[in-house]
Each structure stands twice: as C-alpha cells, then as structure tokens.
Length: 347
Ligand code: CA
Image 1 (cartoon, rainbow, N blue to C red):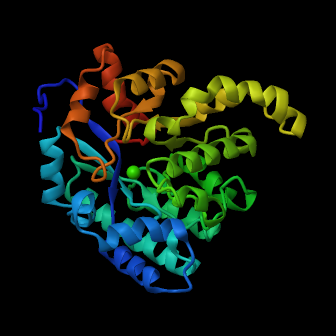
Image 2 (cartoon, rainbow, N blue to C red):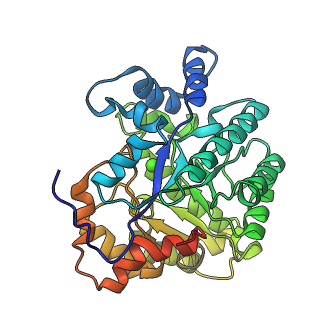
C-alpha cells in the first residue's frame, strides 16, 4: 500500500463502513438453504459472499464480523481515525418475519453500541431498524439514539420491494426528524420485480443495480412530499450521491414539463430537496473528478467522506482524497466536520 500522510490537520471520519453480527450471517445462511425464500438479489449477493472465500471475498466475512483490534489495525493502516459503522445490507430487511427483524435489530444495536463504548475514539454507529414494523422501528430508533447513544439510522433501500415513499412507513421519518437522526439509505440489490434484467448480466450489485435502486428511491421520496411534511428530515446516500448530482438539471426540467402535469405538486425544485435534505458520501468513489463535481453542484457542506470498508479497503483512495485540489478548509469539512454535524458526533 502507498504511504498515508499521518500529519494531516483533520480527522478522517469514514461514514459508510460495514459490519455484520455473526448471528445475522448465520440466519442468512439458513435463508439461502430455504427453498421457499425467493429473493434473487439477496441469493446472488449473499450466495456469493457466504459460500466463496477466494479472491475478492477472501477474508471479508472475518473483517465484517470484527469490531475490535483487527478492524482498528486496518483503520490505522489507511489513516482512518473513526469509522461510522453500518450493519451490512440488507441487514434485518432480509427477514420475512417482522419479529425476527426486530430481534436482530435490537441485538445488533446492543452489540455495536458495546463496541462503541469500548473504543469511543474510533467507532460510532448507526442503528438498524425493521421497516417491516414501522411502529417498532420508530421505538427502536428512540432506544438506539437515547439509550445506546448511536448516531442515526441505516435503512437498506426497499424492504421486500416496498419503498419508504409509502406513507405507511412515515412513523420512521417522524421519529427520525424528532430525534434529529439522519437516515442513511444504503443500497441493496433491486427487488425481485426489478432485478431480473440486471442479474442476468451480472449487474444487480454494486456495479449498477445498487445505484439505480437508491437513486430511484431517493427521487421517489422527494416526489412523495416527505420533505414538505418533515422539512428537517436528513437523509444520507452514498457512492457520490448514487449519480444524482449529475442529474440535477434534468430532474428539475422534467419536474416542470412532465411531473407537474402528472400531479406532483412540490414546494421546491427536486434539486433543492437534494441540496437541503440529502447528504452524500464518497463511498466507493475515491475519484477526484466525481468528488469535485459533487462538491461543486451540491455544496461543500453536503459531501462526506466514506471508504466502504471492508468492501473497499484501499489506501490509494485515501491518498487520492487527501490530494484533492481544494482548500484545507474544504478538506476539513469533507473528512471531519460535515460528518460530525450530520451524525451528531462528538469531536
Ligand atoms: Ca456500503
């Protein structure tokens, strides 16, 4: 690995770093063995990660389940001061039974909170919640924020094909706004009625399916009026805003000529909600042109650094981010202070 500069004047906070409870992986193996479990996206992704242990997947399950010294050694090797831990996708949303989803959310939040207590200078975490039971999700969010001291919530896009623009889920947004808890909409594979054409070309995952799904989900949320109803709601999306910064002009234009004629009456242009309510991270996009473009069109206050460990674990991406041709004050925002503000991290 190339050498990292450890004398920098900011903390590197990585904001989309994955972990997995061993118990959840065990339950996922049982799903793969269940012939009635029909989720092609899950089976393609986790059939691969849970059964292969070569090449890209070699050692990744060990890295996902470790919340201790090995993870910290990897952070030290790549100059990461703090990881914001997100339970890996699709997390509790894989389960059909809402009670099982809630049980795993509670136990995983307890486990990750314990790691944060043990390493307070190195780990913070987002809470898992079960959208399958929106009232229980809101209650667990409150427990995670107020009793466990976690720093927001992660929801892995759709839940068995249902998206959060359906108002039956909005107790989750009501709680998030009241608790000032950012919701990270992390990708998972597109749902069964969307995934087929991606999967037959190997495109259902991080290469493309994730991006299409979360970009659609984010715009769907804006069109649903959720941000007019909950104007202080904060969403976070990864991977350079899942391509949306590149689409701002077209989204606003199409809103005027097509969407308004189809009955979508929003208070503001789509781009304004993206700038006001949606924060974006650089996970998996350690690439100068993309980061600079995101900062230029979304604003330097809205872009946060992320690595996407252990799926991305590469010191060269950190070095590329360190070497961005931007003022030190903007680097401080990208790496540290935007994350501290959005996720209420204490310095
Ligand atoms: Ca990720």
